[in-house]
Length: 80
Image (tube, rainbow, N blue to C red; front, top):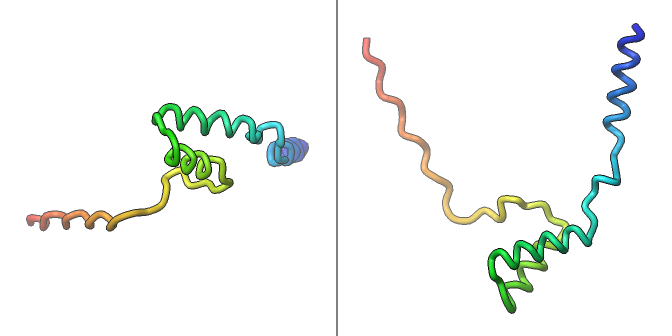
């Protein structure tokens, strides 16, 4: 019984949000600048990249574009 109490207490501790792990605006700015420098962006392209990068949206893949890929071909018929 005590084992369950210890496990429950450990889970409760692990589920508490940890603000020290949050990314600060300064860290995010440094990351965005690095990305812009890495892509050698200048002018309006750099400004647009920085604006998108600094926004609070979490879109690691970016927006969906184009047509979805075609479905895979059906498997060959089974031979008996």
